[in-house]
Image 1: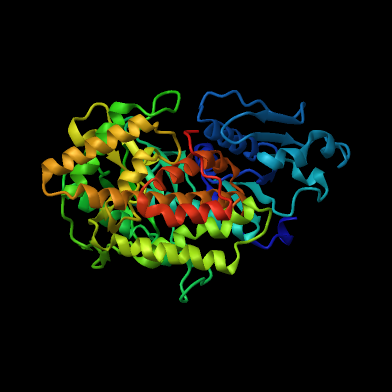
Image 2: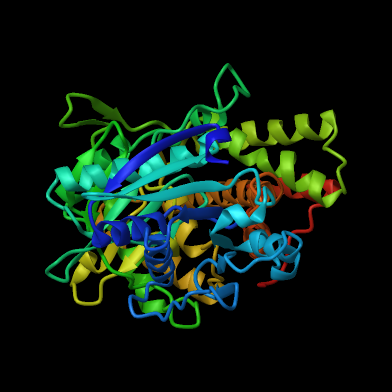
Amino acid sequence: MIQNAPSRFNLFLPDESATTAFGEDLALLVKPGDCIALSGDLGAGKSTLARALIRAVADDPMLDVPSPTFTLVQSYDVRIPLYHLDLYRLTHVSELDELGLDEALEDGVVLVEWPDRAAGALPATTLWMELTHQAEGRRLDISGPSQKLDRLIRLRAIRSFLDEHGFRGVKRRFLVGDASTRAYERLHMPDSKTLVLMDSPRQPDGPPIRDGKPYSQLVHLAEDVRPFVAIDRLLRDKGFAAPEIHAADLDQGILVIEDFGSGSILDDQGLPVPERYEAAVECLAWLHSNTFPAEIPLDDGRTHHIPNYDRSAMKIEAELILDWHIPWKRGGEVASPQERANFLAIWDHLIDELGTCEKKVVLRDFHSPNIIWREAQQGHARVGLIDFQDAMIGPSSYDLVSIVQDARVTVRRPLMDMLMARYFTLRREHGSFDGESFVKSWHIMSAQRACKLNGLWVRLLQRDRKPDYMRHMSRTLWHLAVALEHPIMSPLREWCIKAGIEVAESEP
């Protein structure tokens, strides 16, 4: 079977510890639906590799991982459901149905020892790993679909980067992924300290959708890690709590950064802690009271230019409600040409109204998932900032919208109003501040963000197969209702009513 696989490469594992380390690294890239076939003679290291992977996914080095030789299958209810199969005692391939292979692959990862007994019944996307004894250690031959091998090659590239930058042998554990293509690992150092690895490879441009540009360029999303490094430097130079960067490969998109821990501005029930939200808003008020350069030099000789939150970016984001929410709401029926034209005309007018409003560097996603609470610190240092690579120069109100209308957790109206009042007080203390203009800007950007999110949740569901985000819909529809309270929003309010968008008039 290995000979018929589309591509291959091999590794040398000098001893059992190297086999264990590879299994632990492999745990970082497995995803639901993955099938890994482990072949080799008795004692070649199949069980060692499988055991290391299972314990790493569980993040439990002492987890009991018995051999499934007699049970045929062992299952583990961990971060990703794992199913460890040993087919040595399989008498006929039809017995795979009894083991529930297809069901296991729907939401979990399957590790198969003695896969040759499956007689070709494993998925075509199986990643094959064959271990063979050599005098000096073990040889691991890996083959499978090129897409999966690309993930594995990336895994090894990161390990090589760590080895070259003084982190040889460091343990890597999955930290978190998000709706983007970035992934994060926690690095456990020998001295018990931890760092964070950001894995953010440059992504190929999507298809051009307007003016010859893909969506990512139209909305000014970071295409590599250079914007993160640049904004990080900007924030740290001004005394804000952005992570120190310990090592970087800007071309490969690999960073090792300071670990701010897992402190949250939410409580154990996932609800806002008012004092922490207030501290975040105080940090934001100070951020918006500063002046930052738009050009930031980098160590590789390049310069990052902070893009403007321009008309095209605002409109194409707002159009997500047209392109995704309305067809979802109408059972597939798209917005009519006249509806679209009216919607875009309304937004052209609203964006014109922003012309005289305050423009500052905005972090763009200033909300609970991206704010680390640092209890042991003082002042603004308590507010750890970790996601700012998409920062732009635009209406400062956008960041305040992001935190007081947190997309992922309900900030009740009294707390929302208190936070906004606190922000206004601090901005006035820090210098001149046009409150009336800011309020107008806030409602416009609140509506723009709500239109984007109420379309984005559907896109994540239908295009990206990420249904969990739909649970936020009632909240962001309520945010849209709040945005439409300002008199300047009356044309958009009327458009929403005619379009059948059911804005929520009360808190979810």
